Length: 184
Length: 184
Picture 1 (cartoon, rainbow over the protein chains, first blue to last red):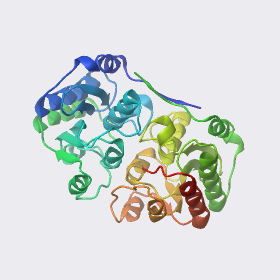
Picture 2 (picture 1 turned 120 degrees about the vertical axis):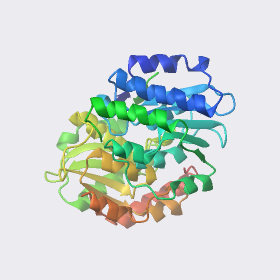
Picture 3 (picture 1 turned 90 degrees about the vertical axis):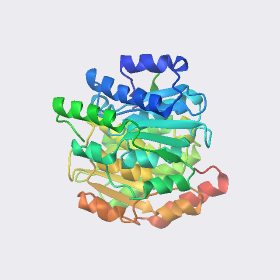
Picture 4 (picture 1 turned 180 degrees about the vertical axis):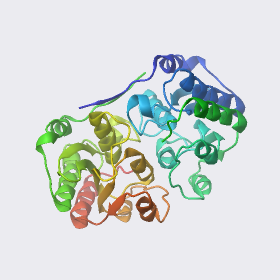
């Protein structure tokens, strides 16, 4: 009894050429993950969320994930979790070395599960585009997080940058909502 | 680029014969997962935590997981997450049907990540042996959960039963602590 996390072909291609993908600014990185969320609904391979891990300083892409809960039949397959698992596999470690080497960029603020998972991953920085309330507005449940989770991250030396290209991320959420009623 | 969750052979054998394993009482189920946590440290296949999903009414085992963070090189591979992924794979769904059909039994209260993941899994009941402070006492970080997470679960119709065979679970934590300094 084993579990294989099989990426869709288009996302596999992006991960295969990660070494050639570099985004220097926070806005470029946010644009990249918002595009992942857009491609995920265009390809019908999951929910409207994308995430990626970058080398903070060089801007090199380490791993890219999208929400694959429904096609993978796995409630854990959120974009952030996929990006974390792939990055750790690639670097051969259960904790990315830090504290300020790797940045997780997500098209939306993390749900309660991903909020809990991020500190275990070793990333030292989190960039989010959409807010929790933007995902809720189209019917997604974000779970129960401490209301001061951003302060708690900062106490753990994890920087949090929010609202980067928020309106672009919200547009993808609305596009998904128009085509799909499946939220979870 | 793919990710394979490969169980250790001894745990694979337990999952393979899940249909033949039935535990009717809460205490028997807790004893089963505490034994998983014990076997995991005996076999050197990960941290001192075990979890399993049972059919609440029949007592049949659906899936069994242990902490495999270090050997798998994956910060997400907590016992509860493994049990959830395996159960969803087995039943072919991203949300176990409920609300009171499946029970997650864990040798310890969930960390922040697992606390966030459990409501997405579809389980209707959570049974825990050790407490959060028992894991912290040997050096594990449990993350930042809302202080009223049990009430929040109950508001989601997830029953929570704590402290079942707590002292037996604590003994395994202490056994691990004596042999290992690796906590995370």
